[in-house]
Length: 208
Image 1 (cartoon, rainbow, N blue to C red):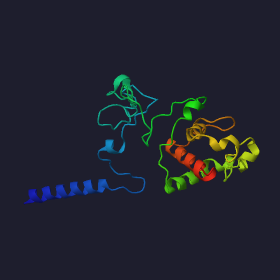
Image 2 (cartoon, rainbow, N blue to C red):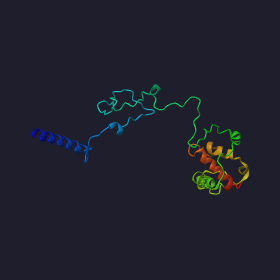
Image 3 (cartoon, helix red, strand yellow):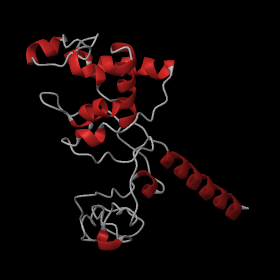
Image 4 (cartoon, rainbow, N blue to C red):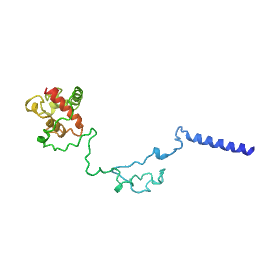
């Protein structure tokens, strides 16, 4: 009986220790189970540490390598970012192909048609985008009287002259690649949104 009580006592003390070890309070973080689930290997695309023993004094990794080792041994040349599949063309998030025309290729750009179907919703979104990106220079009515336009000078009046008859592809291209004093906005505005701005310019500002 004494042996049985002793075993029970040992078991109780052990379980109590285990339960208390799981708790965390104050400066005590408690014990960490499966540390690899909390501290995953941070693969860096440009800065790789190929020495597998680097940081071994600190390591808690399950693969036995140093804590700072971050080179991907599973990919060719230890690359972390994979190269695209051969003969494939990347698309944007909205499914568009990359826009490859150069800034000077306005004539070719003018042949492009607006792929976004015109609707009241598209015009509403185009108005918001125009206000965000264009009205500062071109003004809310497209007359080149925006606050920034007054300072810069030479801002196009979208309601006047040859601007009225510009093809949609031309307007899209100028927004994408820039022209004259107008900088390129292709890195700031996705293609789909630029086409919505074009719809707004043609339908609401130029009334075409």
